[in-house]
Every structure is written in structure tokens, then in C-alpha cells.
Image (tube, rainbow, N blue to C red):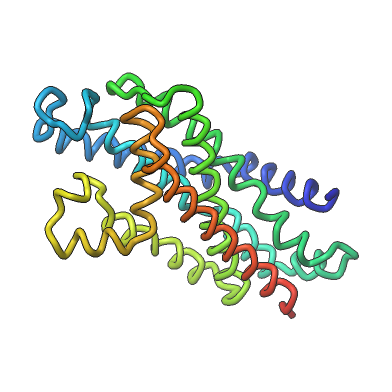
Length: 251
């Protein structure tokens, strides 16, 4: 447990020491929110667009913004740097278990994204956004974002451990973008064309986005929320098991 705290704290200190790496995680998603709302808000006015449920189009777009922020996984880049400069080998030579090393490096990601999710929600409020599910909904939004961030950071850490390459790890981070655009990002799933609806239905990110959207646009609706949590739990569980295995066999 102490090793997890030490490694997790080190990850947070790394992030705070390098705000130039942390700021894009917040600013790029907010940029996309402003651009997407600016382009489509007049197409989907609040008073004549039923799927907005009385809110602005920014509320509909907010889940994509949060998910994008949660999909940077900067901890993996710090890991590659340590592999390249030899510091990671020194960590492996300590008595700390490799399971603790695998999990400890990921602790900082959900903490960072939880804080960023709150900031993004606060920034969105002047755009006519309100979380209709109340404080419980805000907490669930933060939990979903933190969970997704943990799974995605674990995926990038897996790539870093297997390739030991910053270029490959950066490239793996781009995997999220096609997944994002194959979701009901701009309109609900039932308004997509048939091929896109099939793609969105097969895309697990869809269910996380729809859970977040439900939390923002309506009172607590567990039928819409539960699939998102199931996807996140499965994603995190699988990626953590893979990371522990790869770390234990790393040489």
C-alpha cells in the first residue's frame, strides 16, 4: 500500500512539474467544445430540438469533451522517459512488487481527470449547461470520467511497456479519435444513418457517452447510466490484468 501511495504521489508531482503537458489535456477538449457548439448550436436550437430536453447544445456535447480530456494518459509518456533514461530499471530492482509498480503509476490519472472534469463542468455552466441529475449526477460523471481515464491510461501504459517507444505510445493515444467519431457525438443514436448506427452500437465508447449525457440532460435514469459503468468497469478490469501480467514479465 505504501508503494502505491509513493508511486501515485510521484505521478501527481510529475504532472504538476510539467503543466505544459497537462494543460493540453484541458484546453484541447474545451477548444473542441467551443468549435462544435459554435458550428451546430443554431442547427439545434434549444426550444425546437427535443433531444436537448430544454438545454443548450453545449450540454449535449459536454460528454465528448469530458471523454476526450480523459483519453490523454500522460502517465505513459513519463514511463517511456524513465525507460529510456534507465530510471525504470532502478525501480524494478527495488523490493517493490511489480504489481504495485504497474498499479501505482496509474493512480495519478483518475485524480487528475476527476479535477479536470469538475473544471470542465464549471466552464460549461455559462454555455447554458446544468446537470439535471443533481450533485449525485455530478459525482457519477466524475466517477465515469475517472474510470475511463484509468482504463485508457492503462492501455497506453501497456503500449509503453511493450514498445518502449514514445512515438508508438503517442500514436496509440490517437486510437480514441476514431472511436469518438463513431459514437452519437453530434446527434442521438436513433438519428444516425443505418451504417453509423450499427457502428455506434458496436462501439463501447457510445455507452459511456450516453451514460454521461443522461446524467446531464435528465434526472437519474439507471437504465441509461448502468451500461456506461459496465463498459468502464470491464475496460479497467481487463487493462489492469493485462498491465500486471506485462509488468511481471518485463525484462
